[in-house]
Length: 417
Ligand code: ARG
Image (tube, rainbow, N blue to C red; front, side, top):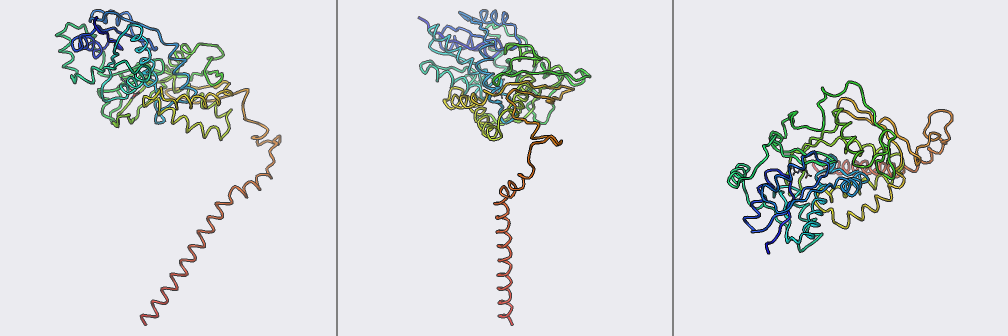
């Protein structure tokens, strides 16, 4: 019986060429798998291309809800953000794709899975590590990493094998899902060149955005967004709507220099209006309900969590341990946050929670205040005690040295005479 390989198939040039290449090189049957993670694609067309290129079987799965609940939601609770800027959209999608590849490989009796990641990026690490943690007996093949063909060579190969390739719409290399769109290559490879307008699909140009501000109220329960303007929505629909609303107001572009896991610095551009807005709102709510100590500790946990996810260690036990801590902190994260969008900017203009730690009677400057200002005096006395002690020790040391130096100088002068 022929061996089988399950290929993660996007319908693009790399993975279409991979179908033929895997058949030729391994003499195997190729089963293709395409997941809907909320990207805007014509899935029917992808299926047709898979079959016309030689797949023996094609799987198309709608994994949007699983992606939202199992991957994006934990990231919202963790305020997941790599290097403070990137909300991890692609990084969160990869372990789910890897998980589905393993599921299909097991049900189809395949000995290997394959993906179209290059040898220069993070995605190969995320895919390989996840597949191998889930089922070490399944082999992972990465044709693009192995074959070393340039894009032109791939086109020649595709023509030679009669592969019907989709005419490329743009010079950019992109990846998208519900949580964001990653844009690379073409003119973006020069970090000093402003991204041209045609790089963007989710976020409007400032000039084309509405003249008056738009408001959105996001309701949270236990750290998760559950409603927009008072209306309950499921995760997929809620995120989709925030993307649309914020994007229309020209909000949601990230342009930064990013450190890839393999050591390369790269210029990355993202459109992630929903992710940025929801995380900002979530952070703001946490600021209202968590203590200063919790917030400081959680910030360190968030950094570590984001690093694990970025670097392909979704399956690392520490990630689950951190999720447990984060989950505890989210029990009080209920409330509403009001966001104001205008001409590419966003500001949070209101927040409320049944678990708020804000006490008007303590913070007010009016005469209703219950805060005893005299108690601050004793507090300041002790709070500054070590700073004062250190400052006086430093001052007396300086005086001491000067006296010694003066003494030595006098002695030397006497000796000369
Ligand atoms: N630099 C981002 C990341 O590592 C985006 C990767 C985009 N991937 C892609 N295949 N175009 O998550």
